[in-house]
Image (cartoon, rainbow, N blue to C red; front, side, top):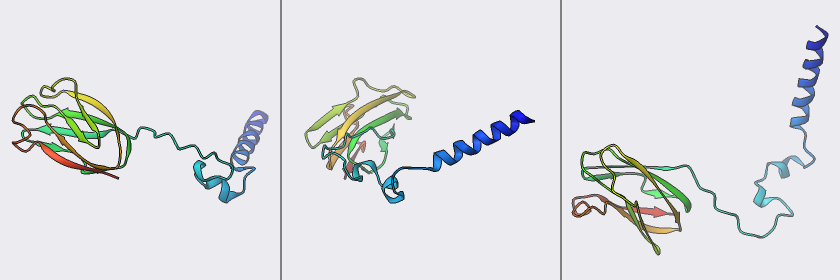
Length: 138
């Protein structure tokens, strides 16, 4: 019984200590880059969660707008034919290294800047059959 009282006391102390801060509440809740005394160095762009892309005859399913920054596309071929994925615009032209066979998934990481991009399937003839779309990055 005495051990339980000691553990309970320790838990209460830990909970109270976790809620304490040496900074005023408004300052503690402000994002790190807005706190006083922060450096003027630009923030490093961190990768976001993967953007799901599904390829099938003859369609690309994915968001039409994304935020700028490091972006990982997780590309899955849900169709029956071989497909691939390429993104082009704002000085970027990047594609999967190899085609995806039915059911395969691969990733492609790109540093996206604000602007308009075209994403498409570079397999000959697929782009003209509808496997292309615009992507807006802000």
